[in-house]
Length: 99
Ligand SMILES: [Zn+2]
Image 1 (cartoon, rainbow, N blue to C red):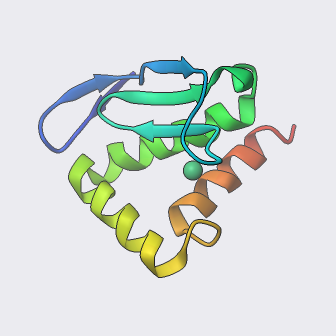
Image 2 (cartoon, helix red, strand yellow):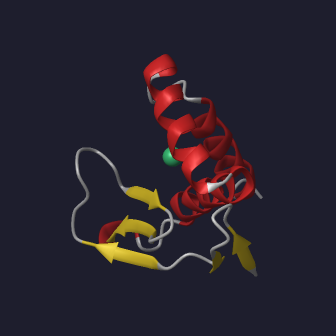
C-alpha cells in the first residue's frame, strides 16, 4: 500500500516507533511524514493502532499541510474530546475492534 501526499511525496504504510513515554496523556501520536509514535506499554493495543492509522489516512486524503492546519484549527474550535477528526478515528477503532 502506498500513501501519496500533496507535496508529491510518496509514503508506504507509516513507520511505527515504540517509545517509552509520550508527552501529556497521549498513548499514541501520528506525525506525518515521520510515522506513528506509540508508547511501548500499548504495543498490543489494537484499537490504538487502528485509531492512529485512521489519522494517517486523514492526512493521506486531505494532504499533509492542509490536515495539520485543519487539525489545529478544529482543536481550538472543539477541543480534543469533540474534535471531528478524533471522533471519526474513535468510531473507526471502536467499530473495527467490535467483532
Ligand atoms: Zn486521535
